Image (tube, rainbow, N blue to C red):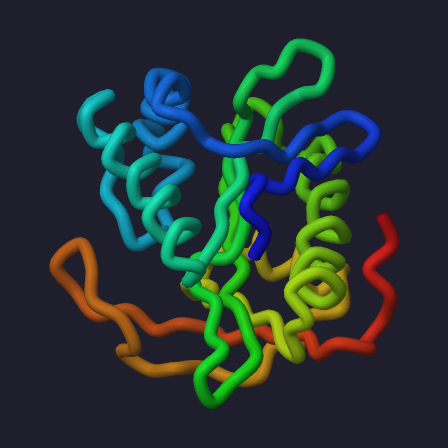
Length: 185
């Protein structure tokens, strides 16, 4: 990865580094049950916990095992969500796990459809990856539809694959290979 954090831009959005100064806004997003319902985290209980999440994004960026952006409105730099690669695998692979979240006030307005081509282009063209994956908790139809519209294929179900919130969860695995459709920006 590059030393300077990559800034990506679309018509209405900027994808930028998450800073500790974003903790209050990130707390407001992740404290909503609708946001974390299908995620491996509970509702964010405090601004301190939001700061921990931001520190985690800095750690994965620094050790080059992942990269997360803050999704901001270009008009006023309001943080409306996050996106990126929770993990990047180079040893015995060439893949990354794509992930995203958005404040529900911005659902259904095409913002994630605007973000996805930039994530795909960054993964395939800048990082040179062969495969992008997404793990989706069954029931998260919005994420499934978004991924499918962008050429990701549901490859199967990983039964009792993960444990959080006191139980085991199945995960649908979606993937897109480099060359399967263009990531138009």
